[in-house]
Image 1 (cartoon, rainbow, N blue to C red):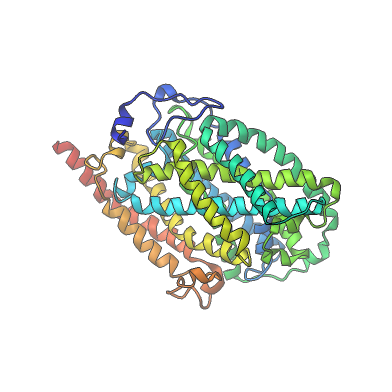
Image 2: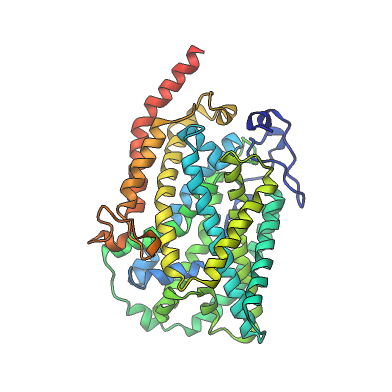
Length: 487
């Protein structure tokens, strides 16, 4: 069935515990339901995992080396600002009822949008690999502490169980994700609070206050890595979970609940991570940071911690799996949404074989992945947001034309593509990565001076994309209006 036909077909219901039939077609008004506060549960659960603590650890260790106040400030700013971007992008879903990367066609053209969609897909699959691998490593280590023999077989079994849970929930779709994420939020929040209470007595606050003040480049770099690892990593999924909301839903509530739900847990976890990192900086280079955080825990809390740590990572992974399936369909793959997860599963298996059995460290490839893919995602999000604020709030989306290269948005948008490519070139030239696979970045000075540790290219790329698209897109939008009037 073609995308054009899917637009005209009757909308499928979004039912709890049933496989969602909708793919990337816009959700009809009769099928829209729910309230904006549902977004809180989806995004809070996806970001409540104890992995958030590691960002606080990174901020007080090289290359950022911030003191207490700088790290807390950088963590809060990076978290809230980056998730505010997700909130604004979520507006598009409420307005047009289509997935995020389908809406992106308004900025790039129906075919030109293939470029950012491919990057988005790689990013989402990469996150799936990282989150499932970390959950698997954590499960294996904690099972070992509980006295169970661990081996390659144990690792494989842990991976299969975790991957199946994430994929199964994503397979069922939106309604089930909302319900499961609500349960996950309450459960993992309670267990995480207990974990924090157990950790605080072990913290030496004299070491925390003894942290030396970091440089401006360290502060910018810290904000950048938090933005890349949190909100920037989710911008390409922002509208996927708001597209079922009625059009009459308050725009402020969509932005507010998304931003608040996404930010509240990471802000708390980053502050805790700053305190822990000052006392145990070796966590920053750990190949299994989730297990390392469990080292001082009493035996009686290991099972609850296992549930919170592994479950929190699964909650993030299932959101990635759902959105990556939509991305795959947006690329033009003719599959039912439910079947697209099989391709995700293949890449997840291949990626996890490398991470679980061959990777020698966690931080270098993780940091390199976040910053390198963070630059194009930041540039894309800037263009998407400017398009919403500058054009769509006034004119809305022509939903049917999002699926027709001969329609209003045409095959290619020169403004969107040019702004994106220039911003990526500048941004990637001003970042640095310690991962060998990304050694080619930094060609504009990102490996020297201020830019060596700041990764400022992510922020620069965002600004360049926003400014260029803001200047160029009015001309293209005017030409679109003229073509429409001439028809």
